Image (cartoon, rainbow, N blue to C red):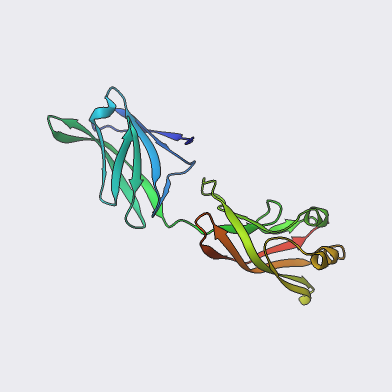
Length: 209
């Protein structure tokens, strides 16, 4: 099921209100993806509503429902038109932010870096990843990572691991952690739903009791 988040726009061109709904809580759309949106115009049949833009194409999939496929990264104007006697008459316009789809980010126990309690860290089984903030529930699996534990700028522990789980050596070292110790995850590789390997940015955690 596609969740639609609505935004109400008002235009003075023909004194008609129109509502645009996106499939995520943002007016950001992404290159290389089907971006779902709906559009309704007060007092008009959906059959007469036409969306147009100079950045990509629209495909109508239902009454008021569209798929938008942009061509380039840009802040893009979308024009809402009504069809009258085989001619298009502008009703209004709105803007979307076209962006490249971001890489996933690594996390531990739902934290994407920053402070983490020692007990919370020890309760975790490994490193996860997600497409945080995109509104998409896409699969992502960490398939390898390195972990460094740093105290007073000195590296106390380093290990490269296959998969996403903490091994017994690392779990044992977690027991010795002190306040302000730093856990640095680097060399993080992940596999997306299509099987493509992605390399993620390092993530740093600070132990706070």
